[in-house]
Length: 298
Image (cartoon, rainbow, N blue to C red; front, top):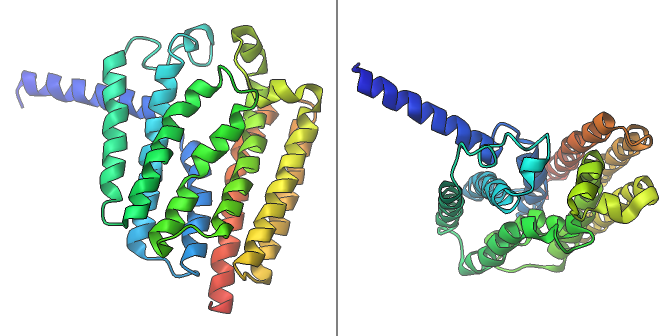
């Protein structure tokens, strides 16, 4: 191997490492928080027997769109992140990746995501446009929306109506109930995350639900978990799900109550731990769905 090839491979490896950091592929929690609600919708829309092609498309598409969203977020916050200790060494903020390179990476990820859904029906194609708009515009809502986490819940949950459209060719009412449940879930878990960054957000003049709720932040988080589980129960009744699914919601409720112990003192470390723990709430609900369809053979 010549030295020119070695240098090229070293530069390529370094670039890939930077792109992984930029897209947060090294921190998959965001992918999982998008993926669980999408999989709920995929299974319910298919009555427990989804097409594996649809599963593949939505799993990969969710990963790509979350990655694109992270890239857009860093571009939108490039002048803010350099003032925050936790983010000032990100690839774009530190100058290791250029602004132009960042934009092209986001466009490429979104384009590949669109190519993925081409085997699906026209309604799914149409819904992909508001999905991209929501994902691209969310990072800018922190400048003017009092609770940008609500907007995040819509953006993170738009795979739900798309999944129903892909399977059924329509978006029934249960899809919108699931989407609304995801909005409240996103407010809950992203408020926990915002409680970690509260001081930085105050200093930088960024809006967040933690600042909006103020001293009632813990109460608001727990209320949002309660509303989320109530809406998931309603969606379960609409979908004709059985006892196994509702047992999983009871388990998820217990997990949500555990979050009260974590966030009640507003410790940065414990609030962040609560945020990460939401992955297991989403997983438990999904496991209940799959098990319910398996046990009752709908």
